[in-house]
Image (cartoon, rainbow, N blue to C red; front, side, top):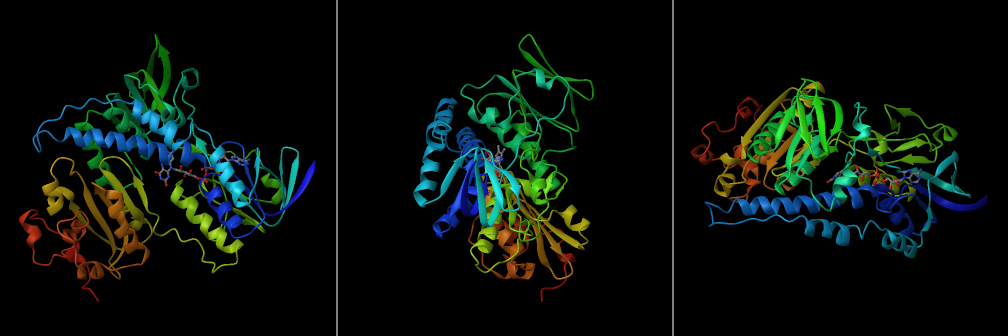
Length: 475
Ligand SMILES: Cc1cc2nc3c(=O)[nH]c(=O)nc-3n(C[C@H](O)[C@H](O)[C@H](O)COP(=O)(O)OP(=O)(O)OC[C@H]3O[C@@H](n4cnc5c(N)ncnc54)[C@H](O)[C@@H]3O)c2cc1C
């Protein structure tokens, strides 16, 4: 066994680990980065980046199909090959991380290919090398697709999200198990390229973690686009019969398709990480960390393994919090109140802070403001593709905005303003007092809360600002 010395060891150079390791190296630290698969991780090769390339292509098709009746006529002929080629050649380099490895090494990082295992509070083994870390060890080992134990599923050639991202030729039909963000995003893309898509979701609506108003908009768009949604139904059995996948649902009905995509969430595997050797605790399949992301003295954890929403935005935020500590910079504990997240369907669904239900559960006395995007100035003139809704959740006690959802064209970016409002604990009065660009999608927020002030919103929406009158007067 070779023994090496380092200041910091980062186990897992995925989204969060690579970010952190690079920053530490750039700051002059002696860092060892360990990665068994691809440097850059899930987001770069199988998740955020390639899926958004697919979504961009699907959105272009949808936008072209909206030309009829607005700007002439368009004949749209989808072709998946440029999408697959962009993902393969431009985004993932053929699922090859040599550029990322070289970049890390050129910065001055020490890279070891393999799976790391803790052997004590200050040591990690990878292959036949042991590294002793003088300042700390960071666990950033991520998650992988969860495959539910549905009888028969293991016997068919199901797709995980990895397969869906790497597909070169599309099937004629697809059943998607799981109506969360990933199932909805990928299902809509494939449908727009001509695949007959059915989404099966066990809960009573798509995107069950988001506001019901958001689910309702998305379900109506999916219905219009010909995506068959089976909510409140669980897959009980899967089989392949004469080359066709048959999914038996719990109401006794069958859904058939050429392929099945399993999008039922993610799971983590801690079995080979040696966590016991450093007394690291697990609860509900995640590493227990404090608000500084510390799992034990000298050991930090970040990303999908920490029990926070599994998002790149979370992983890189946590990487920054840990980096500040390791570099002795102004340390501020992790604050998840804003938790901005986007489901990149069309319409996009941006969310920050608490949903109404979560706010009530957290003990807030809430008021809500809801505005349909087609009833805003910009939404109305946008015409086809304007489906959406804006919802603000307000704490009546002091009129601060504790949560917001924006569904619609560029709904994820609209969330920029609303997540700042949640983060900075802005009051409705502050949002009402500012001037809004006109006519803009974000101006819909102003219309929702009456910021245009002259009641002109009533021309389009007679039920202007439901709920807002219940709020205490601005202070
Ligand atoms: C289809 C899809 C789309 C998504 N889109 C978005 C999006 O648009 N926006 C967003 O914010 N999030 C998105 N996500 C979520 C996002 O990809 C993850 O939350 C993020 O990649 C997690 O980062 P991480 O650093 O925790 O883990 P990862 O990026 O998974 O990296 C962990 C790394 O650790 C390595 N590893 C595992 N075991 C060991 C070991 N023993 N030793 C050393 N290394 C090890 C793994 O090989 C892996 O490379 C999406 C997810 C999916 C599935």
